[in-house]
Structures are given as structure tokens and as C-alpha cells.
Amino acid sequence: MAIFDESFHTHTWRCNHASDSERDYVECALQGGMKTLGFSDHSPYVFDGQHYSSFRMKPEQVDDYFDTLEALKAEYAGRIDLHIGYEAEYYPRFFAQYEKLIAKRPPEYLLLGQHFLYNEVEGIGSMRKTADDAPLIQYVDQVCEALDTGLYACVAHPDCIHYVGSALVYEREMTRLCECALKNDVPLEINLLGLRTNRHYPNPAFWPIVGRVGNTVVCGSDAHAACDVCDQASFARAMDMVQQYGLKWRSASCILNGGHLLR
Ligand SMILES: [Zn+2]
Ligand SMILES: [Zn+2]
Image (cartoon, rainbow, N blue to C red; front, top):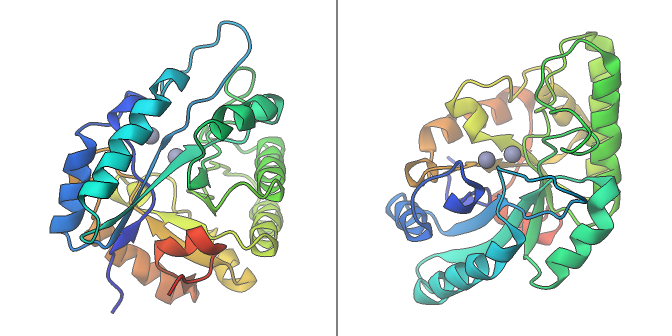
């Protein structure tokens, strides 16, 4: 039976809605028998004008993020493998300046967490419930465009779009998303935070499509508190989904290697 010993979706206090220290997350992961832990806090972003983003770290916190995690990486070497990434939206209008920002201290991986359509300055939240086709189509367009940049290693909560319209349109559009992820060798994440807190995702309409298209699937704890890092109970539910929908589950470190296992 698979055990949950690798997760690449972990936040830190810098995003203003997560608690505990990085060391607490690492210790909880070790206590839970995890082998690999990736940090993927909400990425800093650069906007034009006065926009202030309250749910992500600031560009001036990047050095502290890396310095803190690199020190822990060295201290815990041989006990647990730590990795440093970001969860980042794809905002076409601000992406060129985003790439410049992260080039200064490049993360090992980027999770695509498309929390907004267009961008957070002039767009709307992806998780806003809607029966309109337009936001769904925009979400899929934007995720596909993001994946085609080749910069994202995994799609976090790919089914976070909260569309409650036509089942046929949902199937058509999400098939497009899955086919694009497959073409780019990018795994899709079953989000354990969604399971843990009974969100609208994982969406039971989405995962049969993933099974049919044949995407690689990983689990991410999406921990915003240290005690959630090694969420075996939600992982067991995710493994039931893997069985039920015939999904190709892999340990999460495959995201460092285009969806293929490292060992
Ligand atoms: Zn968050
Ligand atoms: Zn997210």
C-alpha cells in the first residue's frame, strides 16, 4: 500500500495565512515518516501601480525564505530531503516581470496554482461559483498557456475552478486541460487541503477525465499549518480516488523530473 512520504505543497507564515515555523513543518514531516518535503509558499509577484497582494510573500522576503530553508536543508541532510519552490499563478500581463523577479534566486520548482482568472488586479477569483461557460474556458486557456511556457512542474488543485454549468462543457474543457498537461509531462495534484476541509475540489466530475486521458497524478498536502503536512487520513481518501478512477499516481518528487520517478 502506498504511503504518503513526499509532499511538495507547503506554505510558510510569509503568505499571511499560514502558521508555524519552517522547522515545525520539517519536524512534523519527520515524525510522520516523510522522506521528502518541498516548500511552495505563495510566490512573490510584481504588479504595476499601487496593487498590494495580501496573500503572498513580498519580493523583499525572498532572501529570508531561501536562507531559512537552505539552512534547514543542510541541517537535516540525510534525514529528509527538502526542496524550495513556489506556488505561483500565471498572470500573462505580469509574467515577463515575474520571470525577472524569480531569476534572481531561482526556485527548484513552480506549482501552478491558478487562483485568479486574468490576474488578481483586474480579474476574478477562479474559485467563485459560476454556471457561465466563459470563466471555465478562460481558466482552461490560462492553465494551458501557463503549461506551454514550460516553467511549471505541477498543477496544484487543477479542479479549483468552481463551475456548476453544463456537464458536457465541463467535460470538453477539462479534457483540454488534461491533454495539455499530458503533452507537457506535467502531473496533476489531488489537493489534500480540499479533502481535509470539504471544499468543492477535488471535483468528482474531474478525476474520471484524468483517468481517461492518463495523466500522472501526485498528492499535495497544501499545508498551511505544520500538523497538516503529513495528512495520512486525506491521503488515504486520495488513494481511494486513485483506485476508483484508475489514476496513475506517483510519489510527488516526480514533479522534479517531468512527471517521471526519480528512482
Ligand atoms: Zn494559501
Ligand atoms: Zn493554491
